[in-house]
Length: 117
Length: 113
Image 1 (cartoon, rainbow over the protein chains, first blue to last red):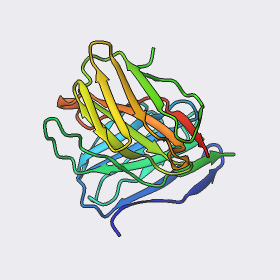
Image 2: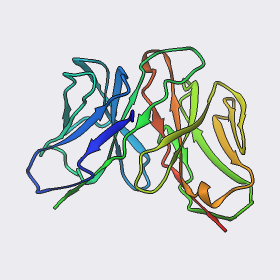
Image 3: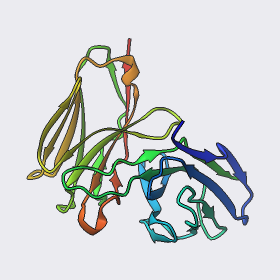
């Protein structure tokens, strides 16, 4: 089955610890994205990557880091610098193609719920 | 002020009702307007999208965009209990920002049998 997998589903972290969230896709998509979802705030873009070995900051990149060494993988590290890391984290991917009047549909994984204790 | 505003609800309707979900936005550069549906504890999935102004219909769902008012709507006809979910509007300015989506807060919808 083609799709996006995120692991783990639930993650608990002590304050001051870094933690890495996994995101893998087998859709052969070029673009990948990380979002954070908090109650009542919708989804906010953390980082995105349109091609291997390249990525850009989104709207709330502070306290997070990413890498894109392989097309299939886009791991997100939540560092101890992130002030309020407890949230639902969603990874997405898309073809990365640009066609006028057509959206580049983003397909989402099942998410990782991170709780800082 | 947020770029995209969406009434979070919650919205509770009986089965068969017509549902109207709305978003307003402030960025006039937005060209692509999307609606995502998110079931509890799942990732969102794209329901439908519209490019620029106009209407688009897909079965029981109709999306409308009024760029002059910076207002978009999603109508659900003959609502079903399976439509119970959080509905998120999302917008894309295209150009160099293509693929960088801005989401509304989401509206929680419950359809009662």
